[in-house]
Image: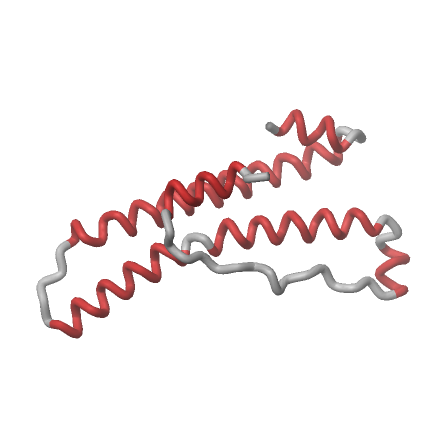
Length: 128
C-alpha cells in the first residue's frame, strides 16, 4: 500500500535521497514504567507518532543538503553562483517544512481530541 505522504514526497523531492528512520525503535519498558503505563499500546502509539514526525522533519534535509553542495561547489570553482539554480532546492525545503508543520498540527489535534473523545477511531476521524 502506497501512503499519501510517500506520493507527496516523491512529487516534491523526486529521486532525491531522504534520511531513513529505520534504526529507531520504542524503548523496552521496565517494571517501573509498566506500573506507570500499564497500557503498553499507548507508548507504542506515541512512538509511532514521534517516528512519523521525525521522518517528516528529516525530509527537509534532502533539499538543504543539495543546496549546500551547490554552494560549496560554486565557491570551490570560483564561478558566479546563480540564485535561480538554488531556487528549486529552496522551494522543496519550504514545501517539505510546510508538510512537516501540517503533520505536527494534525498530530497535536489528534492527541487533544483523543483525550476528549474516548473512542480513538472517532477522534482520528474527526481530526481529518
